[in-house]
Amino acid sequence: MTTRTHNAGVGILSDAHTAKREEIVDLLTKAYWAEVETVANYLAASSNLDGIRAKEIASDLAGDVQEELGHARQFAERIKELYGTVPGSSEFPAEQTFLQPGDDPTDVATVIRGVITAEAGAIELYNRIIEATDGVDWATQDMVVAILKDEEGHMRTYERYLREYED
Ligand SMILES: [Fe+2]
Ligand SMILES: [Fe+2]
Image (cartoon, rainbow, N blue to C red; front, side):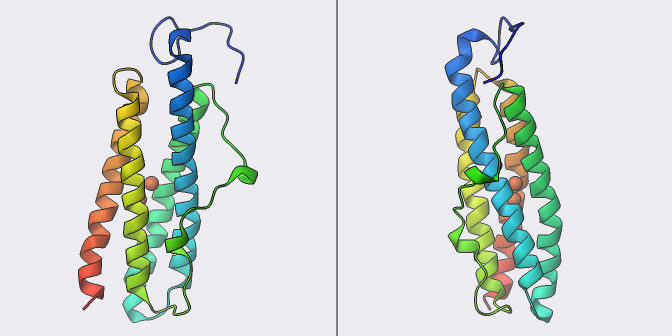
């Protein structure tokens, strides 16, 4: 933890909220890794998909890579603002077993289902962060509310895609 010379008297940066701040930094670190893992897996999926039916999804996922990277950057900035340290890759905890490349590069439906699962996981975690910050860390809450809206948009988009690709 960074040494602090001039502490804020109120709010999440104040000494009174040290324990809460550490709890929030832990949650933001989880969120940071979720975004980084999503970047890696959407990049892989957008590269691996083959075929006419996969084209739209591949290019959509390639665009999402940039958006999820933007989320990772916001989580990193906020970790630093809360006196935390953004971790390096040796602490990377991979969790997205459902988004690994399959044997069939034309199997779009499995990729879409994986994306929905990833987005649902992010939505669950970000709801937790919004609750954990309530009344004590408005700035983190505000940031995560905006990111939550992006993930809900992603999930709904892929739910609509799935209807088409499951036919
Ligand atoms: Fe994201
Ligand atoms: Fe997303």
